[in-house]
Image (cartoon, rainbow, N blue to C red; front, side, top):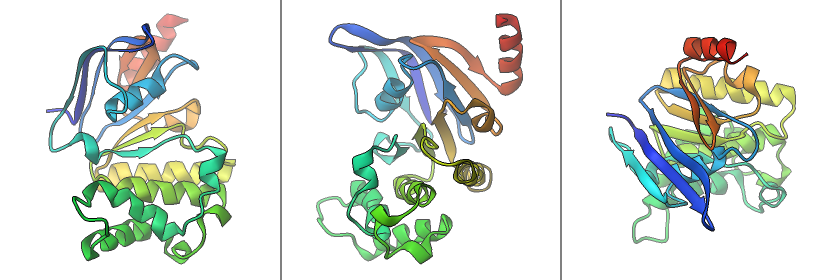
Length: 228
């Protein structure tokens, strides 16, 4: 069973369809890159998968051990978020918030989980530093560690290298590649950085309100040739 499956999903805002009749699935081990023009509905689909918007019609089905509140999410960062006044460890730990239950405090298990993700992303020397003082690449690694606190199964990444310099972008892609290949984390990435993002992709979804294409890289290359 797929981790997440969209069946004929339509999402509308104020009576206007943002995406229409979208169907695709994400399996364990997938590295899915979602591409399309601005306004094509990519971010809307990500929000729908997270349960932040409700489909007008169709179904979003979670399976194979995945629950809606156990998806790691890395949104596009705003200027206000880059200036967030908290330590790296506090930011990462906040990714465990959906596991607090009725408690207002992070127990030892959750604190250890946050520290494990900090070590995994190689940012332990930064754990006590203020998030707002970090470089763009360090901030993205911190936010990725935060997202990993919510999941071991699926990461949704919305334009994750926007604003990063080429070196930081390359480092970020290498981290995602390692998480996918060595740690078995499935990835859905929205990106305009096609050449770099698709270097590691196992599946491509082309969105233009609907799905114009969904398949593996070989099929995508054939589809592109035919489209020309």
